[in-house]
Image (tube, rainbow over all chains, first blue to last red; front, side, top):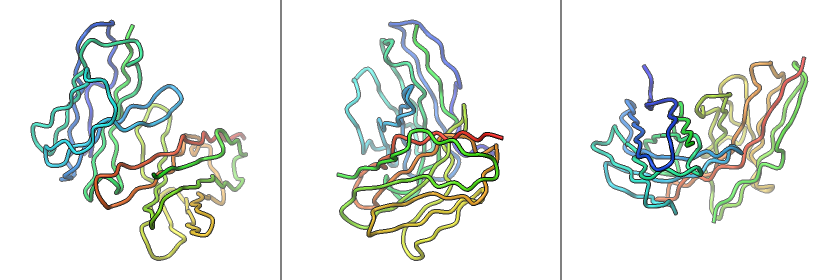
Length: 113
Length: 114
């Protein structure tokens, strides 16, 4: 069974479009995250939710909007996509808070043309 | 503020040779420390973690790491590298107080040659 899953794995779209990435974890964890990994492999946290409540919101354009319908799901919606949004987006989850070990999904490679 | 430095961007080792990847952190209290591995096209997998206790921690795939408070280091080691170990390795530091996110280093890319 996959612990943290993301869909889709690849997403190719044009500038200006709106797209969503979905994430689900079956670990029973309370906290979920979105990270962005750029072409240099640098990982940057974007958002974190704990039991459906937003607890970390880093400096991210407001075109990015996370939504957590329940504590097992955290989706990321991106409006008006730009070239600079091209990256790999990782979902992760943890049991014991934002500083504890996190379990990552396989990633979604977003390419904006 | 917490920070993590991985001084080596890229390391190449021969298969069967030993490996040490360096990680230095900056944190005011006792940190929680992690090493993750990312194989090409994959997500990050937790190799090992240090919270407290024995400063030498064992992880998966034959890796170990040693916490040295005096040097603010948490170096990753493996006695004999396999070709399948070629990947990107990330060190991270965290804290269980407040809503402070994990801070990741910029990663070290490991290449393994025959």
